[in-house]
Image (cartoon, rainbow, N blue to C red; front, side):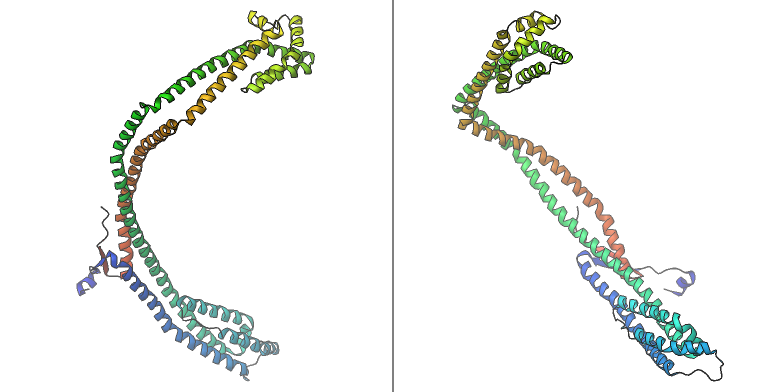
Length: 432
């Protein structure tokens, strides 16, 4: 800096230093070694002063153990007794404290010095207060040497603060450099993945078209004739089954109102036995199982005499001609339901038999296999397209984050380079 710059308080332009991105780890490592060396040098300079102070303290304590009170100074007998008893205890405590080792490692060295000061202060707070009245010279010397250690602690506190700050920059720079490298590797990887997916999507439409064509040809081939015949038969049986089941449910629907009213009449009269019969019949008939339907219908002959009596005794139980025909005699209810149950069982059995025949055809398995391939491929094309879009979003995010992270890295390197040095990064990986 020139004289005029100093006079006007102007700062000199920082030195521009180019640093290649691949060289950063080695550069950081060298700076880290220099940082630790600076802290070690501070300890090497400070430790002899502390050790000298400890030797002086030991000599003072040794002198104190053999010291006699000044004969020209009049002291209270009680104070003399306290001091006579206190000096040996104080000397023993100080010797134990002064025997503590002092590390050469910066952080440990600082802690050791702090512990020394703490223990000396603790020792002095006891009998040391009275000893100073009798032996002021020795206690003053102890304070002087203690202050020496205290000053070294203050100096090392600044050194360690700087050490922590600089090592923080080392860690941040190392992490950011590694992060940028990881992002570059990730970018290359996902770009290859996107290219692979795009290439697959370019070929899959033709593959899908070929599969659909092969399926159409297969469905029109000779193996399809038996399959088509069985499928038509199954459709017929299923249609008839639904018709028979609808007839069965229609009969149940016509009887529902009578059963509901009958339960209500029995509840009013307290006839729990008939209620149980009504519910047993109804729950069985409303089941989807033919076995349960048959079991429920088997209870009806026991129920019918009671139901017939209720119809005679309650004019409101039978509401219309359909209900009257259904409950006029026992078989009027049982026969149509029995026929309907048998019919649905028969049609269901036929449908199951045809289904078994279909499943046994090699045609069915091959057709299902081809249809599954078409289904998977049909889903794969848009899934790949969506994945490509997600990858592109990730690529955009990586590229957008790079400038800020690169500048963050540069600033940390600036700090490590020291005042008056400006780092310029070169050969940063290409994220385009």
